[in-house]
Amino acid sequence: MAASTLSPVSPSQLCCSSKNGMSGASSMVKSTTRTSQLGGGMGKKSAKITCQATSIPADRVPDMAKRELMNLLLLGALSLPTAGMLIPYGSFLAPPGSGAGSAGTPAKDALGNDVIASEWLKTHGPGDRTLTQGLKGDPTYLVVENDKTLATYGINAVCTHLGCVVPFNKAENKFLCPCHGSQYNNQGRVVRGPAPLSLALAHADVDVDEGKVLFVPWVETDFRTGEAPWWS
Image 1 (cartoon, rainbow, N blue to C red):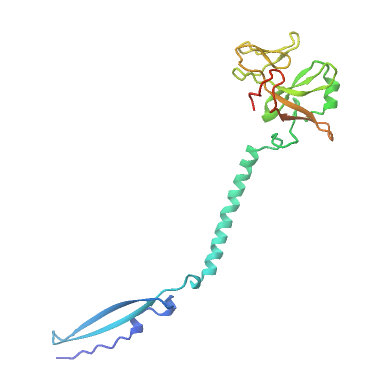
Image 2 (tube, rainbow, N blue to C red):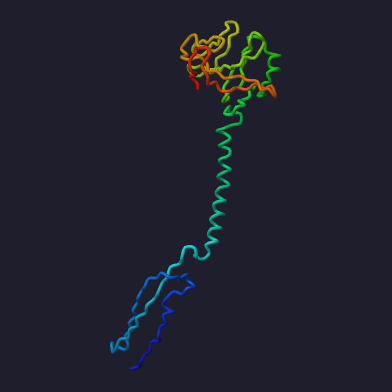
């Protein structure tokens, strides 16, 4: 009967080397047993190999610098398109001249040009009430006083009943809503329903440097009613 010989197996062939990232102080012990039977059960030979595995400190992980660099590059690649999308939305939600600042919103005429107070008064006489674009784009009347000066307030033309734009009737010296018959006096105070409230007000200031008419939100007491402004 031919005899067979088993080559001895070294521990280095069964255990992971330090090249696979196994080095350090902490360890766990794993035991494996190999049993070989020679020739029809005539004898047994066993070898018990003890392997030692180790962990790596977090600050010594291979290629950690490369991983951090890739993370930074990924973050930058995601941030640029995200910022590009947010800027248009921010511009839409807070358009220039929204009235949030102390400068106010420039009044615009029917052609979309800024209203210059001195030029406006040359073509609009005493008692005139002409629509301009005001706060938040709402139609707003500029008022010329009887002394040929620009009133310090503008009148929002949106009816407080159902939102129709109310024209000014110069013959009756009133704002008359064509939708449901609401009426307001020449300062926009409601005098006949079904509108429940007076027309909103806005400050009409004149920029001292450029002479532009600027609308600023009215937050003080309504001088027409002596009450707090309902629109604030």
